[in-house]
Image (cartoon, rainbow, N blue to C red):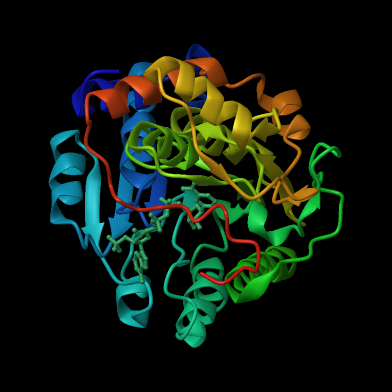
Length: 338
Ligand SMILES: NC(=O)c1ccc[n+]([C@@H]2O[C@H](COP(=O)([O-])OP(=O)(O)OC[C@H]3O[C@@H](n4cnc5c(N)ncnc54)[C@H](OP(=O)(O)O)[C@@H]3O)[C@@H](O)[C@H]2O)c1
């Protein structure tokens, strides 16, 4: 993985199984909150899949476009980009209808000290959106943070296990789920709640952070000693294939890799690739924020990009000092304060 162009190309490469699903999809695809870390690559993947399937459906991306480059990039690919602040009722009302909606909008960092904003964006806005798109299939992004910390030996909670969010960010995400669930039940809107744990792109994510620490000789805190990760291209593909799994009451899906990965082991892998000894502080606690992705694997098959492949690409990226977003995940946080 040598450049952003190569990365973008890889992230937007549709599989045959995605092209088949998209060819059977009725109606346009609208991505709300397209201007963040995942949206641009999700929209690009959707557009390529639509083209290769021979469908006439449109891909539309909505965001405030705080980074205006994202708008240009989308338009260059033939994606319709609509600038809008969804918190402004008139701007939300003016958006086009679409049969298939992916909801990415959310906020996490900066919650401490501005809790009311987090609750408004993460828990109130979903209700407004669910009302507007009551006739659509909605794939609503959520997070594995809605689960409590669980035993690292247990394989992570499944969708049937109880939620138990720690801290106000995670609680507001459960609020987002509950509000979507309420409107799905009340209006009969087909919905899927997509609980994601740590997407991996070369420019951000848990692997990048661990690789950078090993490369720079910075100590790695082992208290949160285990994580789940998934290649962002696979996470995006699953999101697009979820339209056919939307139901009322909602379907719930954990989306991540199936391995419970030891942070220490991962650092040692990077250590070998960089020929450097990783530095550690603290010891692994018996619990971590995990989720069990067996249902996603049963529905959609194995992710296309394996963990060893992600490690190899990330190591190359760090050695080459490839572009990064400087958006740390704070995966080590154990009290839910973001
Ligand atoms: N990435 C991960 O590993 C991960 C893990 C777990 C869960 N998730 C969840 O998955 C979703 C997508 O992830 P992400 O990493 O792409 O999130 P992200 O980087 O926060 O992107 C969400 C985007 O939504 C847009 N947005 C925010 N407020 C808006 C508003 N009022 N009106 C219109 N657009 C608005 C923002 O773009 P503009 O500034 O351009 O409007 C923002 O960049 C998020 O909800 C996140 O919580 C992600």
